[in-house]
Length: 301
Ligand code: GRG
Image (cartoon, rainbow, N blue to C red):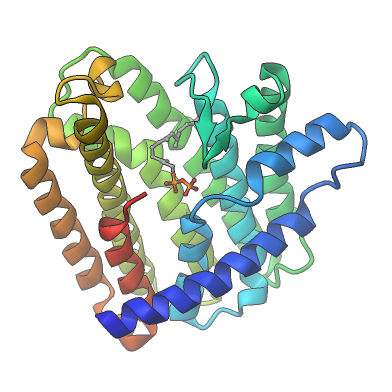
């Protein structure tokens, strides 16, 4: 696995440079009017983040022999949706956060109205890119399928619906299936779309491979969220004392709260194993996807 992790590190660095340039090229210039809106879009999107979702798109493309050039537009589209969700999630009406990716949140750096509009515009830009970016070398039917996939993942049946379930669950005692359902929508849907968009770019993909990739994506989506809860729990315990973490202060349900820290770690490991098992027919070509799954449960931020 060490070799795979080293290869993943090289791949991640190359793709991070690649996606940074691809995002930059697709964002409106900072001096184009209305400049404040465009500056906010660029500020929130560029120079930050792990770019996990674009990496998944590129790694899936690698597994299926889809050219990276064709994957730049879908990789950017999922990241634009992700950044819009972060901007809106940080607003005072939602999580009311002041820091994101190590810098002031968009509404703190600009203002609330500009942050709302920047999020809205990034969401629209994601669909514009899928609809008309000339670099996306696929048939019109594939383009429509990609737009449909991202719209469903982002909307009320996916990420936004998950956020609504999350808001409604504050103060409630969720059991494990209810917690899982929330995360499958809130963070899982976009992670699944990141993989699926690359699969949709492959003409004539064997449906069984498509289903296996979808199962992989579902498992790593849950593993991602469990690891997120574990990192929150560990940083709360380190910095605030055992009973004062933000999520617990807001009485939000988490995996460590339901399973204990050791139980949550075990569950993350099980999700990783299931994810890797789903990739079996893809052989070595899926090594980067395997390594990304491991990265998800080993990440420290
Ligand atoms: C407000 C429309 C709307 C949706 C919000 C996904 C979501 C729904 C909000 C994100 C809030 C959040 C911090 C969730 C926890 C898990 C998560 C998505 C963390 C951030 O994702 P990373 O770690 O972030 O991939 P980077 O910065 O690396 O891109």
